[in-house]
Amino acid sequence: MTSQAVSWQRTVRNVAIAGAAVLLLVWTVFPFVWILLTSLKSPGDMLSVPPKFVFTPTIDNYAALVIGEQRGQYSSTRPDFPLFFLNSMIISIGAVALSVVAGIPAAYALARFTFPLKNGLAFVLMSFRFVPFIAFVIPLYVLYQQFGLYNTHAGLIFAYQLITLPFTIWMLRSFFMEIPLEIQEAAKIDGCSWLGVLGRVILPLSMPGIAVTVILGFMFSWNAFNYPLMLAGRQTFPVTVGAIQFISYEQVLWGQMAAATIVAALPQLVLSLMVQKYIVRGLTMGAVK
Amino acid sequence: MRIRRTRHWRREKFLPYLLLAPALVLLAGMIYPFGLGLYYSFTSYWLQYPNRFRFVWFDNYVDLMSEPLFVRALEFTLGFTLAAVVVQVGLGLAVALFLHGRIPGRSVVRALMLLPLMIPPVITALMWKIMMASTNAGILNYMLSFVGVDPINWFGSTQGAVASILIIDTWGNLPFVALILLGGLQALPTEPYEAARVDGAGPAAILRYVTLPLLSPFLVLVVLFRTMDSLRIFDVIYATTMGGPNDATTNLHIMAYQYSFQWYQMGKGMAQAIVLLLLVVIVSYLLMRLWNRASESTS
Image 1: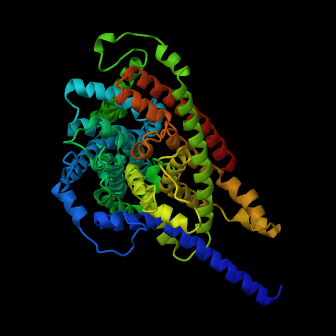
Image 2 (image 1 turned 180 degrees about the horizontal axis):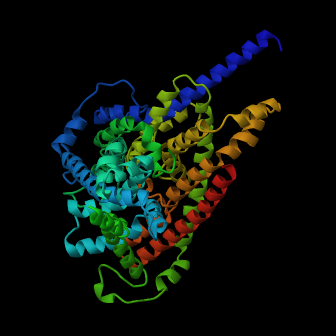
Image 3 (image 1 turned 60 degrees about the vertical axis):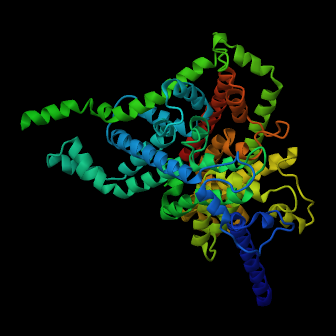
């Protein structure tokens, strides 16, 4: 092969690689760009054929989100988005707090002690990751109606444990197991009780792991849609259920829905860049590091 | 001091249970509703008509077999899962191999790929619902018009609805597959590659006989996770087609939802939920065995 042919081949290869990289980038990022543009359009620009890339931006859609009602003719569509955002915060923070408080000692037990049924218990916890939500939500709905937990933050925080508790325990367990046993044994010889080992060795050394677990647990709670769809009412809807309220029988409020998706996705976008090294680990419950 | 230490050690036998107690209480709070639901699946529970509550043994399950929608929903559940896993793992592997090569700006692409992965699936569905508007006002149809494709009625036609759900689900989950496989590729040992190169193997042979076998535990893992999640996909279908048109995108999960929360037939809905659960359990058991075998053979 002549050197000219080699360099020609190399050029083709580089162009192909660049093309593939651009394609991948567009596929990943374009939907965000387009929805951001859509959220800044007035109703007239929204439905234009062909779609407009250049237009006079307006913040009306975001303003309508904040004011909490539509300035149009259909009075039936009045999602209260600031309330939904607050609900998402309350439920997610509550769910993660409860899971971490119950999960730290449980993860410590699963990481550092041997006892009968240990593996069985770990497996049961793991299996929650794959359970179809409807199998839980039907009986929960009936029970919540009876005991007054329907449409309450407390009820939702409890239901979210199905998502956050198994995740928290598996993640923390995988972080705790990374701490060398020798350190723990040394602390024991120095007179530390199990509580001392947990408080003075395990927790301080796994602080970054706990922080990652808290953030990821918050994100998974934020993404939850099924449980609140059935167990929440208008006063307790989180953003995920709130965003579909812009679809009604009369019409779809495209602009406000686009603005709502941006607002609902925003915390996730920021947080996922913060914990990017750990996301794969979180999504596989610690199976892949 | 000595006495306290011995007491401490004796107590350690019960300590794990003490530590697990709060989590077990919460867990019991989840298992109890599930048991109740299992019981409902053997009853004629209909929320509107509490007086008709009877224990009917397996009637709900037997009725399912003669229900045409159930057969279609089962077919769609399995067919969609197969298609989603093949498409997403195939493309994900391609993306992982691509990013594993020396690509400029790889870390930026990698970080950006996390964004579709971590936003709520229902939000993903709504974003695409906006882009998939059926006329040329929809940006996707507009873009396709440049390559000579007529406007597609994405959510209104049978094929369009199935395709759109597959596309939306793939957008959200392709990064999951690609990032796990990329992580796997970067953790592979280098010796087998050197040996293969010494033996004069070409890139295709190296991929087929070195990379893929070594990567198999990771491949089985992503297949496992993607299969489980595809079998019970709900959010995307709910926010886009609601199972339509003409029940073309109704899977078991959507069907169980419709029975229990649109018609309030909790008994029948719960029976469908249990069938779906059994399906997930059986498939996950088979895949877990495969995973164990794959990780044994490579380590």
